[in-house]
Image 1: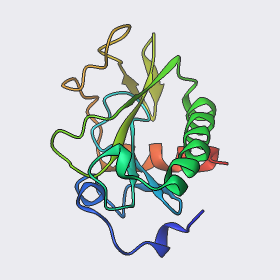
Image 2: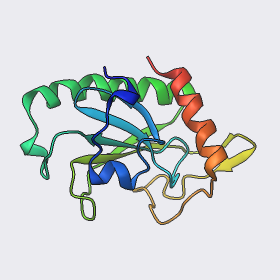
Image 3: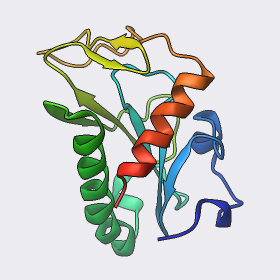
Length: 151
């Protein structure tokens, strides 16, 4: 695992999603960032470091590390927010670098930092157009809470 401050070369997708400020955890081949637009409470973006525009272009080492990273994500999100399901969306329509939108899913509204978070798409596909309106302070609280739950 890399220290967050050790990465200095952020790809365009990482920068679009607020790196380095939104990085929750960096690994050798992947970084986990808080998704600034909180479609659901604890929505993340999992971004590959390698210069690849197709999933199949990633190295074997990247694929191997992905297993551990997804396990850490799921454990942290479970401890932090007790999600009901989790969705990994690899859309890559706008941002070409290999990445997943990681959306914890909730059957019922969740409360955090004095705010109610709704999963507008439950129980169907995530509704990416419905955002829980957070601000920088609430997003920072979500990040810090997730970091305390990280293995």
